[in-house]
Image (cartoon, rainbow, N blue to C red; front, side, top):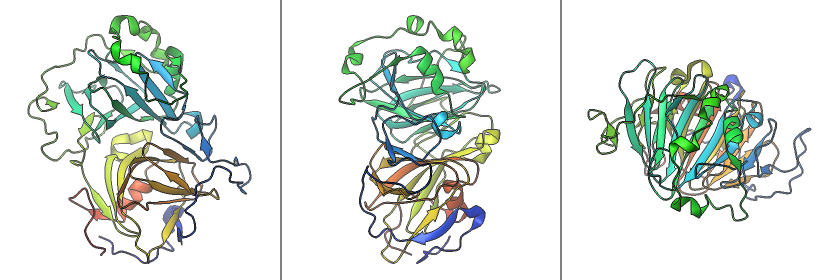
Length: 390
């Protein structure tokens, strides 16, 4: 495990950490910045994902090309065009549903990540070469990885549920734009409260599914979701919130309960606890990683490094607040659910001034922020950082 450094300089491995800079004097958050970098818009903030690759920050419950489908509101914070097809990042807000929210189906070209932001939903998945169908009831912070050619479906279980995550490669939002309806709300409510009193039978609401193969959606009518989950999991011999959860080998779907997966700690510039959800091994030729990172404050005698990653990086706040500076933009102060996208080659730095913050990081390539922090850190057993600075 690395000792806590008082400054981070000269870490030039693949040009990822290029300098150490103090956050002092960067406490402001403004939308009126005039950026001096050629070709970048004046404002970092957007209400919809841009139609091209550029740095941006988008708030939770922004318009985000909101689309309604079967009583669910889909918000697309990152799209194929806005990430140069690196990934799509979507959240779904919906009430409790008495039936499945979607017919069982597979994707041949897309890896779909399911993360529970709040509430509960049940997820079923069965791999292409796996005879065992598995299911989990996901609560806040739980994760499910649906790899290509895995039959899957889900059902919302609580009145205020939010799920989502990355779909790789980007561009999968096109199917929702094709079959859903544009949605606007002056209050930006998570979903229309009238949805809670409606029922959405699968047969009528998915009548277009046979035409969705061009969007990489293949109906699997022979799949019958098992209903024998005990303590949120099935089959009976599977470990869920009662023991360690491992990331599966390439090509197999898997589930990681909140805090029960592998953990690493990096203490170069304060404490960061990295919990990988998808590594290069699981993503394979799709070449991406995603992890949660829990952050401490930064000690007074420690400066904050500037990152410059070759591929696209996205950050989403899960707890607390995150301070992010991208290129020469003013510092963005991000709260829960907010998303920042940083194109490859653009400098950025992040930190928190709250006592504890947690974010999800999504990285194109195998040498992103999470991978590098893990490589320069060490294995760890806890989900919170130590009581004292080391």
